[in-house]
Length: 136
View 1: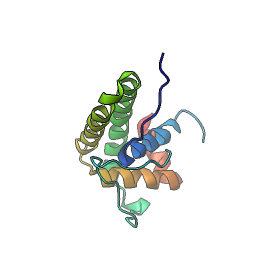
View 2: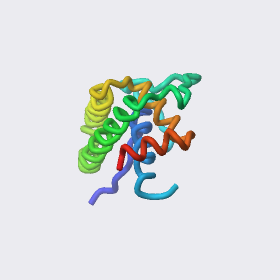
View 3: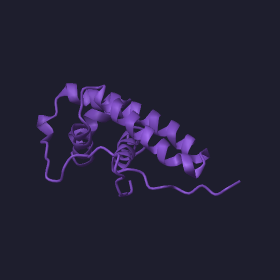
């Protein structure tokens, strides 16, 4: 059996991993910064802020649905990547990024909104609690 080496994933995929970590807070108390490949959508630009009060219930609902979808996509592609030959891994990473982007945008959120909401949820207890409630 060949050793599994983790290839660098995109910044968006890292953000999605962060969303999984946030989702895990529902079940347990409590992403690595990785470089961005050229095909990755850009997360929220530095300096973009969203006040917790500006996040509507509708946006939180959409984020919760997107987190679930992104989690499922990431799990499926992690398995594919683990068994894929090296020559296929870049293609699979691109497919995963496209699928995760679509999962977010299908819920009416931009990647930037999704990323920003997750960042706010990490630092604001009220937003986190609201998001966790939706993820139960």
